[in-house]
Image 1 (cartoon, rainbow, N blue to C red):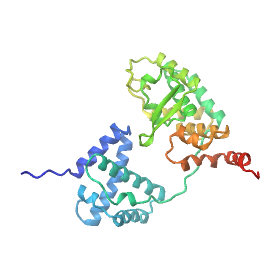
Image 2: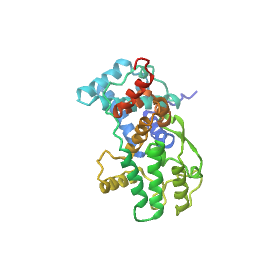
Image 3: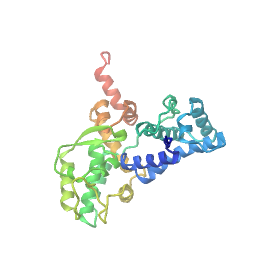
Image 4: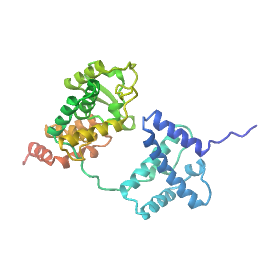
Length: 307
């Protein structure tokens, strides 16, 4: 009876890359970054064992060996934030190996990420967010592109979407519906209500779009009709902030931050904001209280019996 061929490490890495792009909708650049982080662990093992590691080697790694890799990164003066990111990439790879049937690591779950201080979010102020949306609609050139950019920036600021989530929307959502089901990080589903202004902008863009787009295809298109690249949106934002005199921190993601801080200032509770943003942990949402600490003080004064 012939022996069952065991999958090679190269096969597992290729399958992981395909999974990132096809299922998690990561860009080719993001997928390469994940693979580069996993590659650093493989390079460490190659140096450590003085031979090329196999998939079996990776699955058999001990807690001590994972910690030795992280210690070497620290000794190379790689910061805690970068080490945490590399570990996150490696953990994603091991989760994929488990789910895809390549094998399971007994040790990786025990490895904790290094702690680091997260900088507070840097939202644009409300007036700047509105100015960006108005500027997108008033831009010269093709009317459908102005309508497209207006709809995108409204989704970021008015619905709190990530840019990847907005650009991942299919064409069938531009039908006037009042809410969206969004699959965020880790495929976590959340329901996001749409303001009337957003619904109208989506319908207006779809009506002006000069390309035939099927219901299950990407709604937002580039000048030549292909799915819109996020770099185009980032470049568009850079042009607008230059015209409006805004700082470099005025990025597409800063509009999502503005969505959260404006809700906080208006009295929304942190749990609601957590659900709308799709944060897995409430501690991530609590970062917005560093931007607007007056909300915490107001809630304290309202709730504490001795306040």
